[in-house]
Image 1 (spheres, rainbow, N blue to C red):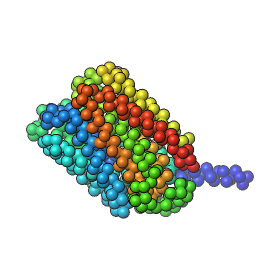
Image 2 (image 1 turned 180 degrees about the vertical axis):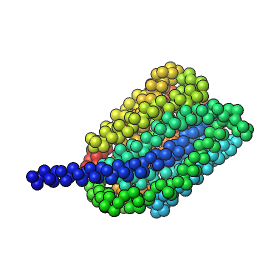
Image 3 (image 1 turned 60 degrees about the horizontal axis):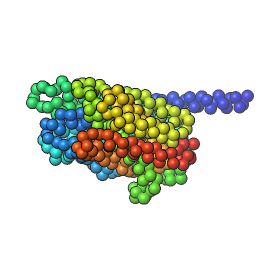
Image 4 (image 1 turned 45 degrees about the vertical axis):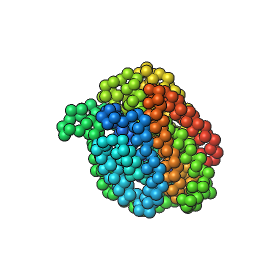
Length: 440
C-alpha cells in the first residue's frame, strides 16, 4: 500500500513539474521565437536583395559572398564579450539593446552605394547580433535542466525554418511589388528598410516581456520557483565534473570547446550555403519569377520545421543525441549532392534542397544539448566561444560559393564541398563518448 502511495505521489509530482515547465515554455518561447525570426531575417535578407542589388551596384558574386560572410567576422569578435555582458547586465536589458541596434543597421543597408559600404554595414550587423543566439542558449540553462533542453531549443530554433517559410514569400513579394515603388528606392532598398523596422519595435518590448531568470518571473509562484531551483541544482550535480565556474581563459584552452567548435563549424557550412544561396539555386533551376522563387524557398523550410521539432522531441524521449544528429546530417549530405547533381532539374533540385534543409536544421538543437550539459550552467563564455568560432562557417561558406560561381558559373562544386563538411560533422559528433551525449 505504501509503495502504491509513493508511486502515486511521484506521478503527481512529475505532472506538477511538467506543468511548471510547460508554463515557462508558453511564456518564454513564443516571444524569443519571434526575436530569432527577426535575427535570422537580418542575416539572410541579402540572399534575396542580391537578385537585384548586384546588378544595380555592379557587385560580383565573389564580392557578394564576401559581404554576406563578413557579418560573421564581427560575430566572431564580439560574441564572447557580448555574452559576458549579458550575464552581468541581465538578458532583459542587453537583448533589448542589441535588437534595437541591429534593426537600425538593417534598415541602413538601404543606403549601400558600393562594395565598401556593403562590407562595413554587414560587419556592424554581425557585431550587433553577436550576443543574441549564444545569449539565449545560455539563458535557457538558467531555466531548464539538460534533459528538457533539447525540446526547448528545438522549439526556439524552429524559428530558422519558419524564417524561410515566412521570409521567402515575403521577400519575393516585396522585391516584386516594389519594382516601381515611390520615393525612388529600388526593391532591394525597400527590402532592407521593411525588415529593420519590426526588429526595432520588438526590441523595445524585450524589457517588458523577458524576465532575467525564473527568480524574477512573476508568472511563477514561490512554490514553483522552489521546484525549478531544486531541479536545476539536481541537474548541476549530475553533470560532468567541469561544471564549476570557469574563466574565459580556461575555455580558450579547453579541448572540449574546440572540438565542438569544429563540429559546429562543419554543420554551419551547410546552413549558410543554403541560407545565402537557396534563392539563386532555385532561380538557376528554371524558376525565373521572383514571387515563384520566394514561394518555393518556403517549401524546404516548411518541411524542416516539422522534422526539427520531431527529432528534438525524439532525442529527449530516448535520451540519445549522437545518432539523432548524425542521421539527419547524413540525409542532409545526400540532399546537397542531389541539389548539385540535378541543379537544372527543378523538381529534383527542390527535393535535394528539402532533404538538405531538413538534415541541417534538425541537427542544430541536438548539437546544443551536449556542449551546454558538458560545460555547465555557468559556461556563458564557453557557449559563446563555440557559437562564434563555429559561425566562421558563415564567412567561409558564402565566400566559397560566390568564388566558385564566378569561377565555374555553377554552384555544383561548392555544394559537394559543403556535403563533405556535413558528413565530417556527423562522424565527429558520433565519436563523442556516449556518457556525454545523454542527460543521465
